[in-house]
Image (cartoon, rainbow, N blue to C red; front, side, top):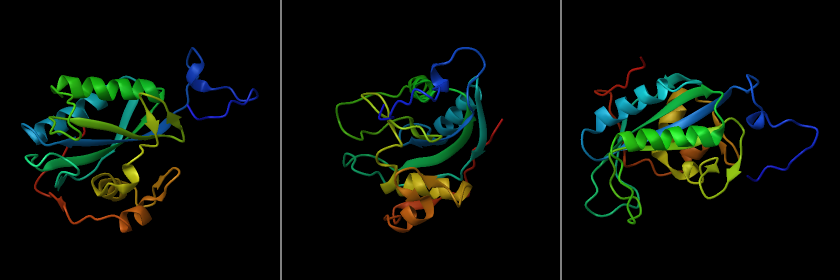
Length: 189
């Protein structure tokens, strides 16, 4: 973690018992293999079923051209999920990885290989992390229209910590490969 310890502040993530802060988190979903829409809906359902997680909004679905992927990679369906949680950031990441595994996500040596499901933790409150497993805020979210646009749809005044207002970031990225799919909608339980 890149946080500076302060002996006068209690890190609520290390406490036991019921004293855990509620944080707003943003997760980005993507799928470009198999039944893409079913994978996204399954991810929303699994996240909503997670103890200590309350999904508050799900963005419209966007179809996007793959970024930095192999030539044979097909288009993605992408969405963003807003949630409130008392889970620590690493526990939320563990849940995101478990959801990917439930949808047969195969990890490959090939960078940005096609996948049945991708669940990225973009932000968890104002937490910062920089370790082998988790980097917060997500290190490439500020340059990805398929994260910024759906997030902006849900929270026009959102701010990506350490990067700036999502609206301004969106104005600075290439969104030409992004198509809103109003014929597709993810549902909250």
